[in-house]
Length: 253
Image (cartoon, rainbow, N blue to C red):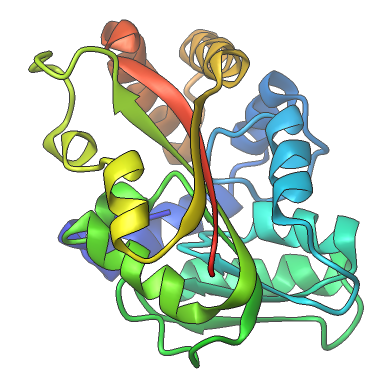
């Protein structure tokens, strides 16, 4: 789940560092109560993956899109649980390489593929997907509503959207990044053409993040991926009360 402002080359190296760091993945799996070896990039805990799976309502053989999929762990896990087909999209070739490798171990042959693309230009056909997930990345679209319009284009009638993000606890709080301030899912999902829009705070998920950052900061910074996780953890803990965790779900009419 990436920000194009830093460029694909930056994130290719960032993901390569992760692949070389079993310590980083072990910290995340333990703190977030997830199985090891899922190649996780985001900070969704185990119960959140169950909730996403339920909200998407996928049938066996249906098509799931994971947009800004990163290393692929969350989308692959949902596809594993539901028997759905999976297409993941990210703009980092290294992230997609790792996602492809993981899918060969977690999913039957031919059930998953991964393609280069962005939040606003996926390169995928319209009205093809039964479900679409986007984990902690919609704020990186420029602008974020353009990603929601692209998500609506990709979903067939009746298709379900599930995305996770953060909101400002106080809209006037200047500590909140501008990219988060630019996201207004309650307003923009209906404007993008979605119905049955629900945006719900997830306090338990947020507390799991706190646990992750605390464990990361306390770990030995033995490699670049762990040190990067620690830096993110310190920044997040310093401003932790400025954000609320949210899950947004909607339906394509």
